Image: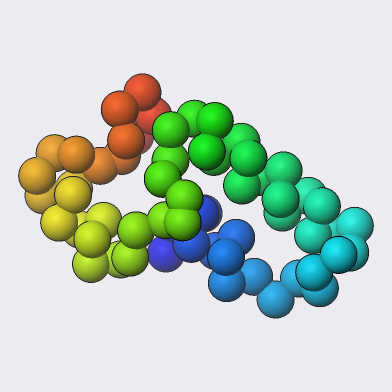
Amino acid sequence: MTAAQRTLTSSILRGSAEDATRLRVIEKLKARGYPFPPPSHAEILTLDTAGKWPPLGVKR
């Protein structure tokens, strides 16, 4: 599971202070080039095998 996937499946109460932080994390990930919504685990494995994961410009 990636950080981006975790932000989508989080059990944080929507609208709470913690949720505001979760939304900031999502924006930071998007600003760094991560696709959102994030690809599935299987898609990430396929992208990694093809040398296309992580996204360009993102450190491994």
